[in-house]
Length: 137
Image 1 (cartoon, rainbow, N blue to C red):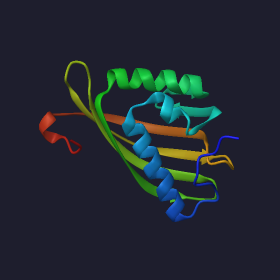
Image 2 (cartoon, rainbow, N blue to C red):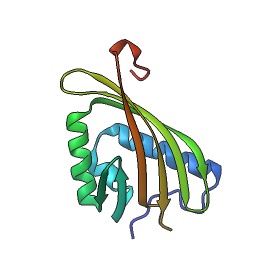
Image 3 (cartoon, rainbow, N blue to C red):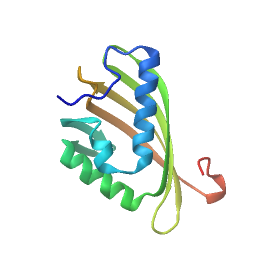
C-alpha cells in the first residue's frame, strides 16, 4: 500500500510538513516524483484544465515545466481540517520568449487516509513582470 506521511487527521504542524513537502516536490520539477504524492485516480482542476490520474498529472507537469522555465514556487499555509489543507502560493517563471511572470493562487487539497492527495483544486492568475521584479532567484 502506497503511503505518504504525514497522515490525516492533520495538526497545524503536520499540515505545515505536508505543505513543505509539496513545495519541495514541485520545485524539483520532476513530474514522476511529484505524481507519487497523488492517488492513482487523483482529480485536479488547474486553472481551466481538468486532470485525472497520475498519468495525466505526469503529462501535465512535463508540459508545464517545458514551457515555464526557471520555475520557482513558494507555498504558504492558509488553513486545515481533518484531511484537507488550503494554501496560498506564488511562483515565478519565464516563457521561451524570456518574458517573466509571477503566478498567484490558492489551492484546496484533500487527502486519503494514506496521506496521498486525492483532490487538488487550484485557482491561479499570472502577472507579467520584469526580470528586475523577481522575488525568487
